[in-house]
Amino acid sequence: MAEVLLFHHAQGLTPGVRAFADDLRVAGHTVHTPDLFDGRTFPSIDEGLAYIGEIGFDAMRERGVRVAGELPAELVYAGFSFGVLPAQKLAQTRPGARGALLFYSCLPISGEWAFGPWPDGVAVQIHGMDNDPIFAGEGDIDAAREIVEKVEDAELFLYPGDQHYFADSSLPSYDADATALLTTRVLDFLDRTVTNRSTR
Image (cartoon, rainbow, N blue to C red; front, side, top):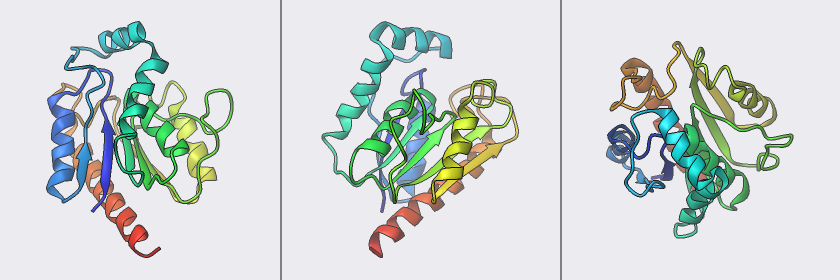
């Protein structure tokens, strides 16, 4: 089965993030969930972002990148919101990546903020709500559409709603129906990455 490195969002490694990882494990996949905040969780996105700001966004991202150095090369990199920063960097720059799952956030693959072009052979799924003021309102959706336009195996899934952390069952923003559909799509993606690897 697939091996996944999953990074949490700005509120930390919440019970909802752990529960999502457990759902993937039940399906037979190996999922690593590093805690980049050393046990801290925050009651709001703003408080979590303030903590990240104290450490430094680049420094926090690189914590995640270093975690991957202790794991095999053939990983699927996944991230929720802030966690997309290390996940997408690793998917684009670490040789051997099997795929990327980007939840609620996406970085461009061209221009000032890009890690470079998307690597050949790395599949990617991007998920977000169509009226999320962060994902849809701050440019992430445009970055996602650029990836879908330029990358052969890329999918963007939009869900009706305006919540950011909609797949975290421990938060008020949780949307059970959207999460069920997202999880189905993610499991299909992981099964596909395993099948593609076995046929090479």
